[in-house]
Image (cartoon, rainbow, N blue to C red; front, side, top):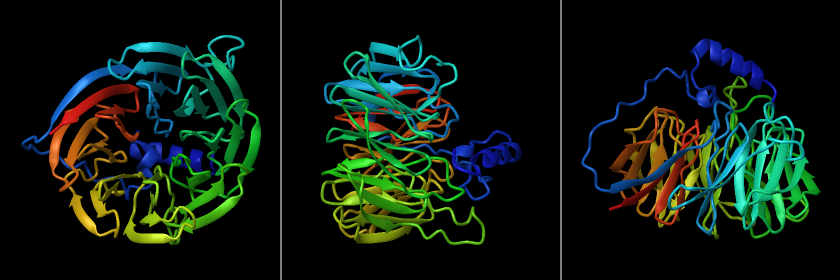
Length: 399
């Protein structure tokens, strides 16, 4: 666990009476009430296809556990208590279910003490989950049978990345670990320092064309070679200026995205930027503070700032296209794009659809009364949304 995290948890829990400490550290004084929701005329039809409950979800672990969707129509879900399930994406029917560490000889014996929060991630027939105790479990995506296990010396609270025969795991201590996807043997470790205090959360590594891209707790985006873990380049997105450690927070915690030609990233108390994948050279940069990631579609790059405003920028120039401020202080998830709609979840369990062209409200549904912190996952015409208690629903939207 990062230094000061335990102290921060205790102080914030006492001071805020149980408020969500995971993002509290970056929310000014965390006293602004959520902007009340207003009525609007829906311009999109949203149908809930199905819903399921998945174990204990992420709970208050600080992990943004999101489902993983495979190309063969399966949805994989995991919960902090070790439950892992494969569901039919069309119906929500359970195809198989496993409890990590449930019995002797199946990964670990102590299922009641191990906590799972990183992933799941899927690639072909390989499914990988990481945990808060540094454990990594790989299994068959087809039936959940065990493949291999590994251990690192730090929490895993972001989804591993799989590609090129290598599984890349980001530890909470800043290190990137490369494991052989077939055997779990360690291939390399990339060490990078982390500040003594940072926001709770890590960006998930992104593998693209033989390179691993990672957002760091010091406000940087770093690129390393997939085959040997050697650094290619690093680019600063946050300055980390201020008199105190809290004022100098400058994490890049949101998931990095790429359109193949450009890498997009955003940092807390930093910038949103379009970077050249081969060099990290900024193609454009704009000041924006965000604890979440970005989404890209068409001519737009969409991001949520630290106050809960939703922004759209021109993909080529970074020019501001629109801003939606009617969700302010609702502490939104990172955005996803479903067709011509932007999808975000909020701290009261609502799912909001905005028009991609103008940022106007198009539809709204309530998944639950629990916060939605994980990025919604879009596959085809369906978006999968999960809250922190493992309530998962599939929605289809059409205009």
